[in-house]
Image 1 (cartoon, helix red, strand yellow):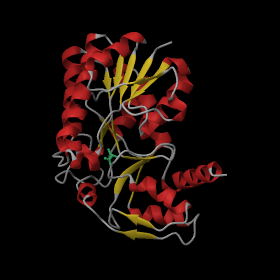
Image 2: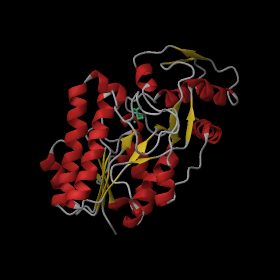
Image 3: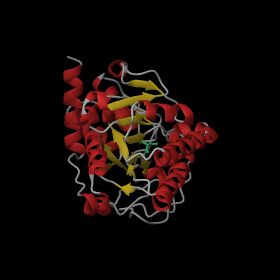
Image 4: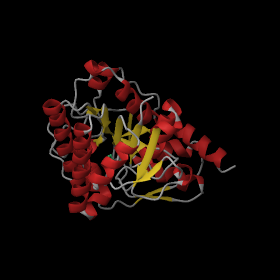
Length: 314
Ligand code: AKB
């Protein structure tokens, strides 16, 4: 059985991806790692404390477990990145280059690295944004992801590293907290609504963004990594879509289950980041290349999250 290393396993995506890959490939075959202390059910013999910037330690973990596949999910997201742009650049770029070099040097069979809709910017066509178009991102996170995409393609073309990547929209899940992005409001809103609180939204009414429910993001990631090499025509990163909505639409969907739920709009610096991103994404290349299909729309996702959170709280 192949051995997988996840870097950034304590993050919003990492936590759920680690669980899903362990279900598929066996618990002991998926090594979780993070710079942060592990969440309760990750803290065991198959967790490594790892800073992706420490290439030596990274290489030692790869050797210790005879790793075949690497998922490098460590990143500083859009909102936090604007507070410390130089560090965001350093972590996002050097972390990726370390992963690509280790993949090349140690002949890792496949490597996964997430990109984002943040690679697009205010000059990009906002509706049904195509796979290849004007990019011009204006956040440090977006700049680092776009540069990262170029490095991914370069390592594939130049050294044959089998790198695969998705440009995730805003990811919405309830099992782990998001890590400082512009789309995080769409996670927080569920927790506030369920605890009977008014939700102060940091984005303005009508700010439409591409979003995806976590089970779809996990499914896409696993399917892309399992796809035949010959079916993958994009070695930078694939556009991927499921749904698009503004804050008032998710609030309305929630209030169908929680009558009387109130949302207020208090836009902050994240408003201009959101406005620079597309409203909706054309992901036909992913659909044609490796058969991507989403399962969840806004309605189905809202019902699922609220049911799960309610049953969790007893
Ligand atoms: C963010 O908001 O920064 C992320 C993303 C869209 O990549 N969720």
